[in-house]
Image (cartoon, rainbow, N blue to C red; front, side, top):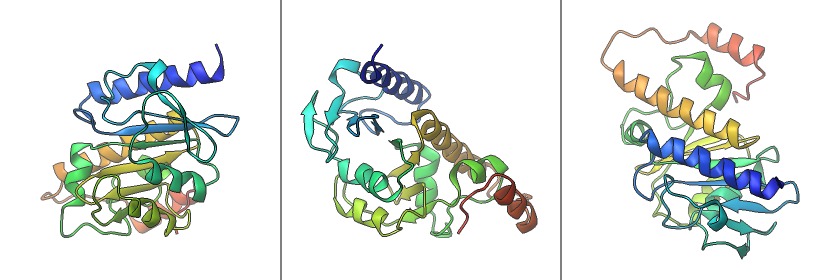
Length: 215
């Protein structure tokens, strides 16, 4: 199986898994991945993550121009910002997952680090997650906001919209996205309880042991 065919199948399989577990409803969410030739595959606009046809996934050139497949998602500027500013990015996942979106709406959410330090895995897989302001869907300003971070964040949360995660490959991006949503869920479950977060010393140990970018 060629790299193109394999990656199309992987995008379809991961997208269906995310959809089937209710992590992005209806026709929301999008996924992109970079091929070894520098071109990209990205999910089409208006498509449901649960019903993708691998053959119809959009193929873009190295400058993100449309080569073949269905019309690509309108969120291309958001994806391109991660590829342009984080050279290790091999895939980007954007969802409308419920708990992460809800977290973006709370007045006391820390915009520089939206997830409370509840588990080491969120720190290991995501680092700090930045809250970005509200933008209209498809607004190129979303990409500008990500570029403004200068590659310092692998994950952002768009206010009243949803999370976006970049990873070294598709599997890493999906697993990090799942960790973000589960941590947001834990944050709500324990919100009014006397919870024990990781201490600054424990966070420092995780950051040091697993070489996490925590600036």
